[in-house]
Length: 167
Image (cartoon, rainbow, N blue to C red):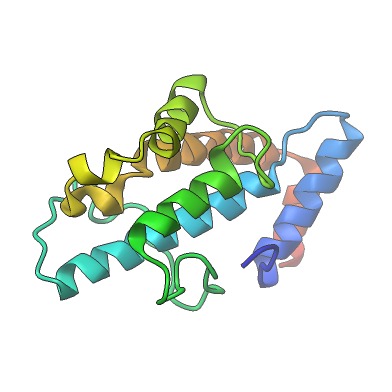
């Protein structure tokens, strides 16, 4: 899933990126989109795992953060040999930790809450498995808000209007 997009998503991302470079602003952040997709897949997959193991979960947002099954699958999330704990740690290392390979743009508070998991080895002993699917929800909410803001500005550009006319 590293940098794989399909069809229109790829075209819109490319147009958006080019348009923003012209303005000399870093408006587009592919790592935010990649992280959003991978964390949504994590959420969906761990919810399914909880259901298979008869773990009762209370999803405050059952119709939110749902992705199509046809998207490329995350190597981290869909690795059946990796524990849920290790998946969480790997995703934090990949996206959230300061100087992560694909460090995302989130608030100081959200970042510190996630990094605290890395620093506290007993976290998983104190945390109910019924909450595992939702551990990244604060991050997902921030990313969604950032992407909506960026897209609302981008959708008003001539480049986007031209793309939509030709799509």
